[in-house]
Image 1: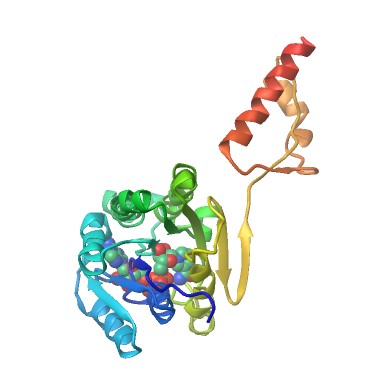
Image 2 (image 1 turned 30 degrees about the vertical axis):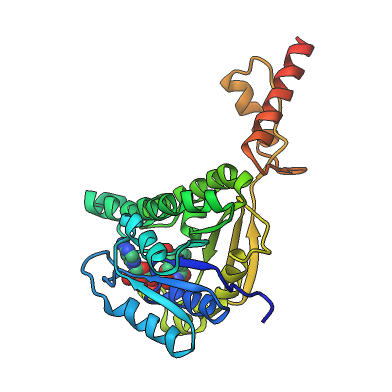
Length: 300
Ligand code: NAD
């Protein structure tokens, strides 16, 4: 086992089951001290219990690892970070994994369906990361993962609330990647697919059984290791496949003083992806726009 985490402390939110449990077990196996956070509620974000987190802590301890349970909802991120500091004296890794589903079409969506999804996924990731940030900044070391979804990347029928929240997390991590760069705080986004109690309502049982959460675990483990140097990127795992999702921008077309008719006339060129370029950061994008403005000015 060459990727070790001795001396490091991780918070894994929603680690009482599903994907989070596998991350907590694997990190602890590799020498990391782990705060196993889980509210222990149902998949719709109601009710609470301490038993889910306790069970995972027992599993870790039985295997010789070090872990402590925390039962707070992720929106109270400061309490979760306090558990790490009080018990282990530092915080190096935050895996924002806790999640719920409230799938319903927009027509039937209630304020509660929208607000609860944002409270757990977006406010939760913000609150835990925000509380950990000063420690990471002071020690000039941090590894942060947020959990998005293919629904966040592509949208999904009946998941406007969840897809919007999962998409928000991509912007959140990409911004933290820029703010954390000079402090060696790296932030990345994970897009997982796995059988779990969240997916058992939307997938057939044989698929839920086949898509083991353990297929996702190795990628996340590497993403929070000190040897990992990527930041502001999206990585995907599921069914034993590992890859990346990146944004490419088409070459498009410069049209001076364009009218709507010009846009319509040139639509196939505007949307052509031949020769598309990878745009990694917003400063690359601004640089591109400035160059176009200069070009426009010198040709007019
Ligand atoms: P899961 O339901 O097994 O795990 C989520 C855990 O989060 C649960 O144990 C739950 O008790 C906990 N939790 C919920 N609300 C919480 C809160 N407010 N505070 C603390 N803990 C809370 O589901 P999973 O499939 O393992 O999902 C893990 C993450 O991966 C979620 O963010 C989910 O949206 C995301 N995801 C999963 C898949 C998939 O295919 N399973 C796909 C895309 C994204």
